Structures are given as structure tokens and as C-alpha cells.
Amino acid sequence: MSSSVPTFPELLRSASESAVHLEMRDSYAVDNEKGPFAKWRAGVRLDPADRSSWWRPWLDLISETVARGVVVRRARIVSEPVSEYIRFEHSGTFTNVAAGEQVRWLPRRQASGIALPGNDFWLIDGRLIRWNHFTGDGASAGGEMSEDPTEAKLCAEAFEAVWTRGIPHDEYKIV
Image (tube, rainbow, N blue to C red; front, top):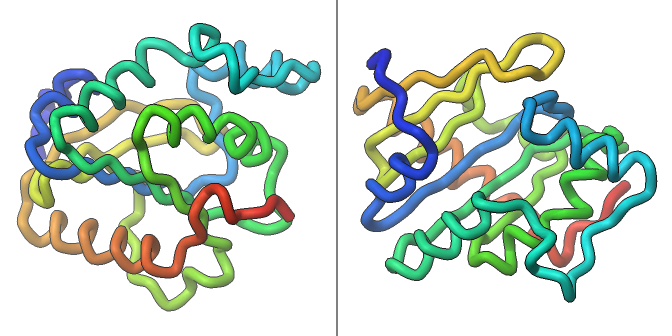
């Protein structure tokens, strides 16, 4: 494992074919989402017609990555009924899709037979892993890089199993 963790722009700009992201928590408390989550809780919703108000620079990075021919997919394993945080994520995911990301949701009960790694991750081109570590309260505990082929294989197989069972964003209805 490497201690040098690239920024997300560096990571995604290094991708030549694919970037997949698996999320397995029902709540996150990362600093850059605290404000948007608080606004959402207060009733503020993103306007699909007002692209300039959406999360920047992340969506620009996704659009740039997809425009280079990289397939970007995100899968989320969620408990049902979903947490308030997952409701927040779901309500804004249309922006990820508009930027070119493919997103699927998998109810946790349907993930029982899947061998999953212990942490959320990004897998770049099937070989480079960025592990995302979180505290018990959902705050970021930093990232870690790996090019271990065994770990990459586990991540690739886990992601594909979740993706195959997952429900496309536009079809997933919040329970």
C-alpha cells in the first residue's frame, strides 16, 4: 500500500478506460457535504434546469473524464428503508448522471451473497485502488492507494456483482 494518495482530479485524469466507485455506508459526514446536506435538510433542492448551481468542480471533472472516453460508474449498497443521508444523496444523483456517470443502487438485503472488501473504493482501469477510509461517524479518515493485484481483483469482482444486481438510478425508488 502506498502512502502517497493522489487528489481526485489526479486520480481520474490517470484513468484511460474505467473508473468505478463502490459506496457501502448509509451515512457520510465528509466536510464538503456538510453545507449541502444541511441545506437539503432545510428543504433546499437542486434545480435540474440550473446546472451552474450544482456541485463544482466535481461534476466538471466527471464530464471531462467521460469526454475522454473513460466509463465512470458508481454503485451504492444501501439499507432499506434508507437513511436520511441516502435520501439526500438520491435526490442529487441526477447531477452525477447528467455529468456522464452511470449510477446504480443495490438494497443491502440483495448483497448478502457478494464478497465485498471492507472499505469503499475507487478502482481505476481495473488495477489501481483508492481505498476510502471513514470514522464510525462517517467523517473521512483519509485515503490509501494500492496496486495489489489480489485486492484489485476482489474490488473488480465485487463491483461487477453489485452492478449486475443494482438498480439504475432512474428506476430506483426510495423506500
